[in-house]
Length: 537
Image (cartoon, rainbow, N blue to C red; front, side, top):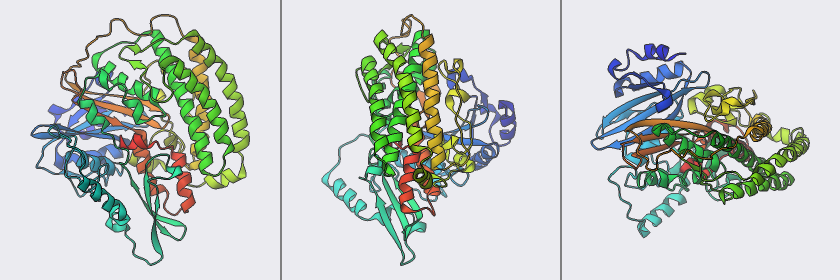
């Protein structure tokens, strides 16, 4: 599908005067349109029929009006479309959650953070903040005054009654039905996450993810400082993909400012990003198997991961949350010792991966625990905006590094691993093969890394992008991460909205665990590879 084709389909639903074919290299969009609330659902239906998935919904406060920016993209054939809706605060917006089920959480978040109300939403209540909250923190006039003891007591009351977190349709209606809380403090959640399970014996009837325990106002902090001051924060959102999240933010600002990158800096970014992907997958591999009762792989995987963290310490000084990227390059160069150590690491990990696969991949107990469990279909992936290994495991060959190449990824040879079953075992297979592909990319980059400066000496020292809206995305170990930037032409971002993969991937879990056993919930959650702050931000 081309820009002209989707423009033709939307002609009767949008104002032609506000339909703009955009400069993708500058803005990150191919087509920008404005619509009205009476046409919004029809627009969403056109996009779904054309096989677009809902990538993100960004809300913003513009005084008397608010903005909703709906981002659509395709898994097959890059075509980014942003549909904007501007309304007065007193007006309600139609919910598109009946068209795209993934819109449910995005709309709840807009209601939570801004107070925007959505008509016919199936469960419009707070998502990240406690239900008793009487403020909307991303409004421009909001000022935090601190939690009182009354707030703490109300939070305790709310947590004491699990049923308040479940929609009316999910309430117990049979004497044999009961609720089980998995989390918020539980080893299998790998963070402060609560899964409220409605059970009939050992069978899961329904699930309600309760998120927000790790909400830290990252997007609000972005508005209260300048562009450079926010560079350390993205790596705290997904602390297992810090280098790649650094790139996601820095790449957005570089796009907005038109900053170019030196050739050596491009190679450095590829090298540290693929090492980061390997470190993340190794942690997932060990933790996933430990969740299923196998302890030995955890020890082996962490031993290999430690070598990567030691290399990161050599280039950045940190072993977990990094601040290595700068607008126009890197904070420092890679040393010859780093490069030599990375080259020696490749054959070592290749040998170890063979051992891992011998130990696990064809293990009959592992196969019985994972095959046919937590199946995600292509239809569900489009409706919820699922990306990463969960998407590729149901047969969709989508990877930002290939479908929307950033940096110099288009200069490297690598494949996008896929599977067809869409279950927990397929997600395992895809991630294991991704480690082999990352080693191939890493080997190519280390063989060709040129000499030269590691940053652009001509990059500006003060950062004031032109007023406008910009988007940039990267492929994290868990899927597509992107940043929607609204600039008002000053040194501070007016609005930053993070599109994080765990947010959409967690949202779909509600559907895929129904009918499975309680023990399968742990398997499905582990196979999705969730990092909780990536959901809560």
